[in-house]
Length: 395
Ligand code: HEM
Image (cartoon, rainbow, N blue to C red; front, side, top):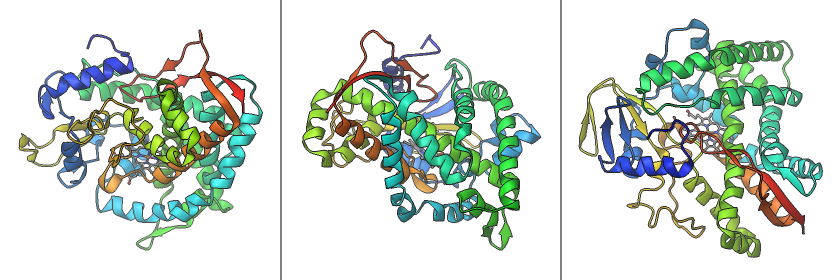
């Protein structure tokens, strides 16, 4: 691939061309192992002993950034991972998430009340809704949401160069995001200290008071987790709301069906998550020589399970490129698999369901506005639109 900002279709074509080298193969250019098949990705993600999530070896030594990584649950291996996961999963039980439904509906209505017949879906709803929900959960000021958007844009705004090795690309990305991460560190440290001094009922206060095996979490451990939640807790949901409207625009028959039978909406959202997977790939590193689907991989190698490719593996999904809201089962890997399976999946699904239901109820027509560009992010980093101008007609 020659361009550093491919379109989504070019990106898909690159992944499909990769399958010719095997569902698991070594990529000479990127100097890593590409895992494209669904069962193969499941195999990698099911074995945290052989495939470590701790990618710090790939990153340049920077003490202050290491602090941020200390509480980053996504990068932890067992047994450390289990301890933190047990603690934080209590904050995301199905009950806690279900209780958020009325607030999500209220926020969606309030945000849509402020729009007219033409608005940008990302600015008006897809960005503010999940960011307000997560900021309220964490007890951080919703009024700082402009700042969170700047951070998210800085973290996502990189162009990944597929012609570099993964190590070079990682160095380049870390250098680019370091100032943002330092700013986030300082912001969260302030927030955590203030909650330690005056606890409230929010998740940050719970983390500050929580004990794991008799020990309190250190400020630095909480920073990593809270920072991850704030960013991971909204960018992917923002992406999913935008991706849903793009998929609906491309598949008008599906929308007609969902309007006629709203019980089809959850399955339609699962299909959006499959065909437009927000996080295109995960990363692991081998701890010892190992095998995936009979392919031998030496120790210390970077292994990249491509969720986008696994979600279009025709051995698991017949006619994988077709958008089909009746696909059952739909075992997509969009939320990952194994011990790191997305903690926020129930919340993301609930937000998508409530927001899309209310959009469809409120407007009888939703069209992407002609003549105004839809802006796509770089699909190597995130499959999402950053601008989505709409024209709507009230029901
Ligand atoms: C983990 C995707 C929404 C919090 C993950 C992983 C994926 C993912 C693929 C696994 C990472 C790995 O194995 O290396 C998504 C997608 C979302 C979404 C596609 C929306 C459509 C959310 C939300 C939250 C959240 C709303 C929080 C409110 C987390 C956390 C982890 C995680 C804390 C780490 C879990 C662990 O390491 O044990 N997510 N996520 N995510 N996600 Fe999500």
